[in-house]
Amino acid sequence: MFGWEFPPVISGGLGVATLGLCKALAPMADVKMIIPKSIPDFNIPNIELIGLNSIGKQELEELFKKEIQYTFRELNLKKGMGFGPYTRIAETEFIDQKFYDVFHGDVSPFEIEDLYAGDVIKKVIEFARISVQYCLRQKFDVIHAHDWMTFLPAMELKIRTGKPLVIHVHSTEYDRAGEHSKNWVYDLERRAMELADRIIPVSHYTGEICHTHYGAAREKIMPVHNGIEAITHTVKPKPFDGNFVIFFGRVTMQKGPEYFVEAAKKVLEHHPNTKFVLAGSGDLLRPMIERTAAYGIGDKFFFTGFLNKKMLNELLAIADVYCMPSVSEPFGLSAVEAVQYGIPTIISKTSGVAEVLHGSLTMDVWDVNKLAQYIIASIDYKGLKKSVVEANAHSLKDITWENCASKVMQVYESIFQEYED
Image (cartoon, rainbow, N blue to C red; front, side, top):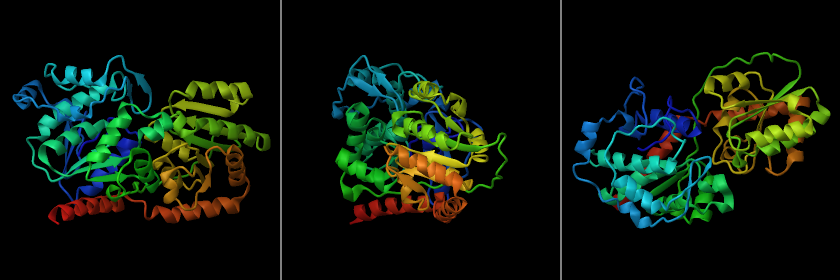
């Protein structure tokens, strides 16, 4: 299995999902997880965790005594635009030249601090180069890769070993950039979907994107919803009077923060004693701050930047309403986290989590009036709040990593059955 984010190095949604699945798979399968960076004293029972940052120069030289010929170059990707996972990164050279430079460069230990800073494409290629050499000396039955950053080594292993390939799609370039997503990462995702034996999108919504916008064969697509770890919590009193409405996630076009701000403006006309928090960072953070100032509601907003899990939990413990107006949300674990705290959730119809949180209030992402009305109703009507919370609490019983892992095992078994036939 190849991962990119993995707690405690980073605790974004991808990392949380990868860790949750690994822990639940551990009793069912022998998992060797290859990631860019691991912490030496971080262990998971029955999971062999390999951080490339822990492979020294001598071991690397041994791995590269026989240099691989990287067949993935058949993709012939010559786009002039690279793409990080969340922020556009303009490239100054064609990607095939970058392949050549990385794969014919000196062998040196994989050192990485920020997974997403600087030249992400170069990091992804270097990760592939080293991890493929390492994995060619291992025994395994199936290759499982989480999102585009790990598709390169997974595809190469598939080509070189003939082992079945499963790609786990937590998010796509289409989600992040919409119709303008025809860049290098999009091409990488499309090629991986072509080569994979199975595609595991985190929702039926994302599965439809894989088919419609990437041309993936429907018979390969087997959606598996994410899970969540059960928690115990205490709802705390707010440190101020009034209502408290929260949004957290990357502050980018994909997450729809502008719809949250526009709705807040309308809510304040009815409930001026309401506070809003927009937690997260991204390229739209400054424009959102400027927009609230222009509307004269800046004093009603808290812009926190990126918050760790502990801080987010403290917010959830005092919140009255949670909003997720995402333009395109493959799943949406944050909404499930809000449900765990007994908070009414308002989510966009263009989200995977709408398939499993049957009690949530859903809206078209562009319908700011509906979002504002739902916020106001959640504040004013205790009966509505109670029904939303109770219905979602019932849905939580099925949103577990154990259920997720069992379905992933069924995906593996379907491949083995196919190979036997």
